[in-house]
Image 1: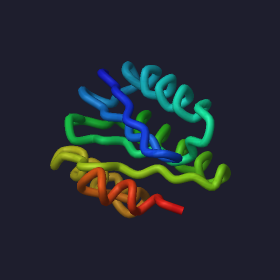
Image 2: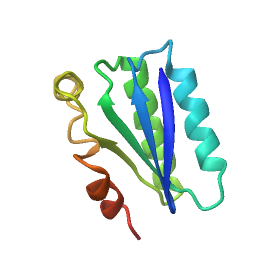
Image 3: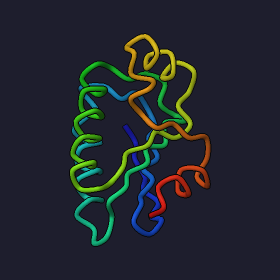
Length: 113
């Protein structure tokens, strides 16, 4: 999994590339933890445009992350999930559990205080 970050004030966009599986989950955890340690960052946007698969372990992590962010008064959003990821979210009935957005402007605007 290749991960790059873009800062937008209190929000950070993590651009993910590759499959989000149990094997790659440690890299995502480290990237998220690193960003949340930054002063003032409370919202996480995961750009899933180049993610073509998400396994159950990763979905569980995303749900846990979402709960943790709510406790911190932050948010987690998924940006540009591809058709495969959308289908996985639908099949697992998690499509309504995540806020989905289609571009950076929409993602950042939606999480502005």
